[in-house]
Length: 253
Image (tube, rainbow, N blue to C red):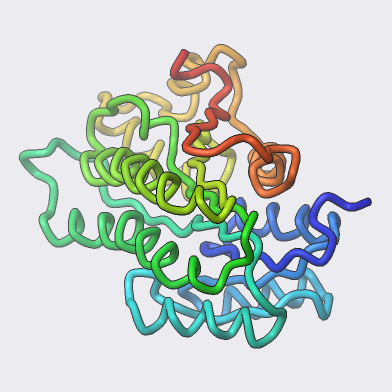
């Protein structure tokens, strides 16, 4: 039997590389998927690529409460009660020292990652089936420090605190809540970060610098991280909650 047969899944950041890789994998395992992203045009491209009636999409700013309620209710109206919430939306500011970091950018990064995940849990939980799963995409830097990325690193640590709190509250309903901690992924989002890392480090190749630090000596493919999300979403992880699943090629270790 497919691992997510007839399960209703919400994926925020759904039009990005990890969101799309996860959507494809979840669909192949029998799920019905609501994609959420900021850009309506990106969502149209994503749904056209997926080309299945088991997908719907809605544009939303995940840091906005009304927009969050809307995407949750739209998923329920379209497919039924939610089984899997994959809070995956993210953004990133410049790579620069804390003393130079723009305050408005700091606030926006925190809003998307932390407030966005909080609102997702707040409004999705009442519309979830018992025994469901919540996954929050943190990062390897949610378990370590990294110079130049004060907002992103702070946000990723905060998501772990959010997860641990919600996991305790949701456990009575059999709903599991975990964070997923990817290392560097081979995508445009990460490349932009690595350009900044390289400049901050004196003009080196930021991608090579990270590959040399990762014991597996490479970046992850989005599909590899999606398989970790599938594990947490499915009954394979039926006794896994309040966990921080590292998928970082050994970077933190």
